[in-house]
Image (cartoon, rainbow, N blue to C red; front, side, top):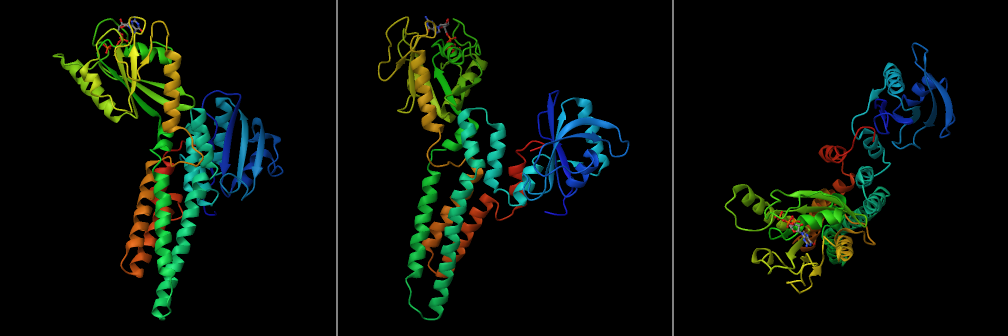
Length: 436
Ligand SMILES: Nc1nc2c(ncn2[C@@H]2O[C@H](COP(=O)(O)OP(=O)(O)OP(=O)(O)O)[C@@H](O)[C@H]2O)c(=O)[nH]1
């Protein structure tokens, strides 16, 4: 796209490194690269060049440079890459040279924003790239790569195409009706609208797995004071993250620890032991524990094997709860049904507990054959599209049905970015860091 400034940014991480990657994009990229490197290298071929300051002529670095003429670049514009030596002074010198040539530092996400505006990717793919940069586990990486590769773009784009055809048919049906030509077209459109709504709703009914994988699965560990919750948490993460003591009521606030369970990011939350207490601080801890249990994706209820099961924890157990009998070295478990017997002290049963947690994590946040939606933004737009499609099916007049189909198409368009709305762009690209 013309009329843009030429922008640059460090694409690699800040700080001392062997190599720093500086990226340049915009209409002046070629001219600027030629000025610094003493001529343009062959497109898309790495060349070793001496980089000079354009005014002072001083050699700033000897660097690998790459020239990507439009449209075959990440942004779709003329672009260049400078693989500099990673020192601070090199970067400062080259930055000054680029400023002297009229380029300006990029805003966060500006490279990907330009790629989107130039039609190199849709909004969901741009989000996939943001997720890939943030991905911390293998399964997160797989989900992000799939989305960056256009899996959601293809799915939603396919629906938008189907919807466009429906709209064309509905409009044709309206015209035929005016001309008095009998047709079954309108009935067919209504039926197809319903089928499409059902398809979107099936995609929505994924239990939030894609969003969970992106953000992490929350597991709340609850139980009576001294049940051994903190010891279990420490044994699971392999370090002393939470304080363990023989004194009941040691954990007062929520202790959160991040864990990679077979590629799914999991947040374990150790909570205060559930009991009535006159201690104000501890009572607040108990309130927080209950809230965590309500909000968690998974509750792990811990009962000490050498004690009778306490009613406060029992009250939180549902068929979804992972029931654990701790301190199995002291006694046979007191809660028999489906309880997993473990001992943080001897390590007995810990492998089985980890495996159970991994299975549950994979079940609630693992990848499935079909790409899952990954953001509340996706969910909102898809719910809106499905609801307009149902309205289109039920509308009393074909004109109203067409109007609803148009609204559904707009909702899908906002999702992929084909209906350009500035505020949507700001939300999506606000997630990026500078240089991406
Ligand atoms: N024998 C035995 N003792 C354990 C085991 N796990 C924990 N304990 C002991 O039980 C006591 C309480 O353990 P914690 O892990 O602090 O229990 P908690 O449920 O977090 O306690 P609160 O912070 O009071 O809610 C400590 O003295 C631990 O050493 C175990 O597997 N076997």
